[in-house]
Length: 292
Image 1 (cartoon, one colour):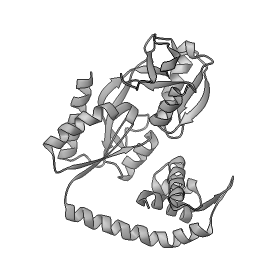
Image 2: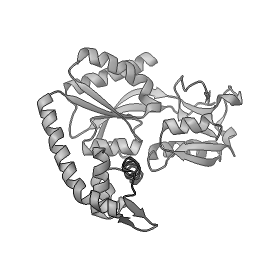
Image 3: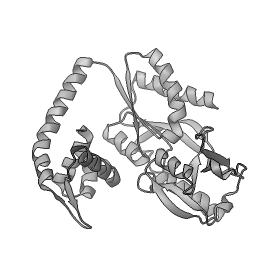
Image 4: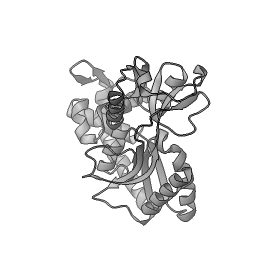
């Protein structure tokens, strides 16, 4: 069983609702729901009976809530002892694959040569999950696009600027640039509002300024699912574009080009990064510059 999934389940069991558990876990409601669903699938049982206004534990859920707390406490103590014995530094980095994936690989390769004794863990996470995890101490660094209201808790360092693109199926055969106004009435695929609020704000501003009114036909929890939907011809998507999105997607330029997004690395203001962490940030910046 996954430690984080168990902690989310116990928080819901003790608080009585997923909404109440968000403040305790520092995760969004949708993230908690996904973790509990994954736990149910692993165990092959239903843990929660969900209705429109309430959540109740099933008999299996009651057993897990009773015995799971002891399991989590024991697992936590074991993990702490292992970390103490290892005495190796660990850097936990959450990132958005569509923004940082091509840059992180070269940065980590160079970092490993400079600090072979430091371990780096990577977490594919939504914007909301990243920021909540950073504030709670689950992550040391996050790589995403800064949003409004982050400045008091997160210190950002810009890495690179990425242009907006319209992702279309390669099978459409259309490769030329387009204007945002041409998206009027188009089928639009987009990231989930609660998991990517800054993306929603930026896309809404772009469409409002252009006068385009596309029809949102799907919301997705990450780049992998969004890309698959575009490849399948379900619609178009506005994304911050890399040169390489795969063989089945075309990233068409927008004319005139909107203000690019600034991909940045963030750390907690109250807990400045250590020397190894600063080196990793420098390697990220170097890799971003080399990508142009």
